[in-house]
Image 1 (cartoon, rainbow, N blue to C red):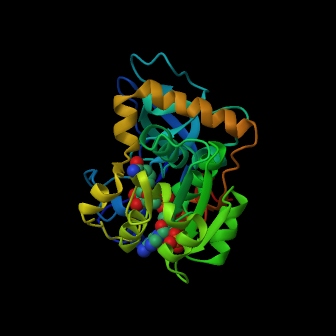
Image 2: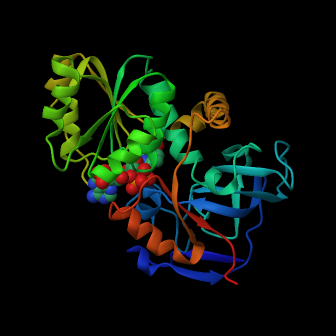
Length: 328
Ligand SMILES: NC(=O)c1ccc[n+]([C@@H]2O[C@H](COP(=O)([O-])OP(=O)(O)OC[C@H]3O[C@@H](n4cnc5c(N)ncnc54)[C@H](OP(=O)(O)O)[C@@H]3O)[C@@H](O)[C@H]2O)c1
């Protein structure tokens, strides 16, 4: 099989595509013939050794996949060969075959095509967990989404709208904001052009926003925290800006607000039933047409470095997905 391999930590251009032996599933694992793989910011961090999970070299990156189960390890009863699946597998997804724990895979609904499914599990799983379990977002509340046209950000816009919130999308260009509007945002903030706090005051007045979804970090974090409402919830999702912010602790005190961490992996491990229930809801919304995941680009697996570089330079909207077809 062919796989994208990381042999030395560094920029995506150091990745190589190689023929290698197909991995064999161990006890509790299955092997998946990968049809497509979503490209995510953590993939960019992991190949540089900058992510919390540091797999030993060499490894194949790629965490979010869809495909068909083609071999089943000892003790697996939940899946069989031929099942169409999607899931978040950690690493190994930028390859024609990948091994995953059976419990890390979900059956792909017949209503979802493999390319859409490849960009769904991490992106929508994270944003659903953030808004449902961590923020307890209520209908009629205001939700500010930073990086609102990115992978997890755009999913948060759609899910927030489906949950009945008033969604305020914030991003770095008018083009990105139009994409967020089409996904359900009713108010838009171009934070490259306008000050985040001033525009928020125009939109919600002095009350502030109930929930902030922040996958960006950096200086936007404190600005958004200063704009939260009484009993607001500030969701720490990620640091795509490259800067982990440090917030003054008097702000949560004065505002009676909470800074709330979000970890999809930690949640799935500790609460598998709630994680599965989240996906039942997400698949139902998708089948009803209430979620319309945006895959803005599909590229062959051999272009993994280009895909990661585009993502890391703020050039992606929605999802970039790699497909595993061999070149003709
Ligand atoms: N907590 C979890 O469980 C979890 C799960 C998945 C992902 N994440 C994290 O969430 C973050 C976003 O991941 P993603 O896959 O959605 O990434 P993405 O598609 O690249 O979106 C990130 C967004 O951040 C904004 N951004 C601001 N400064 C940036 C910079 N210097 N470089 C790149 N983007 C920048 C961009 O929007 P603008 O140009 O509009 O500013 C971009 O659209 C990452 O930090 C990732 O590690 C966390």
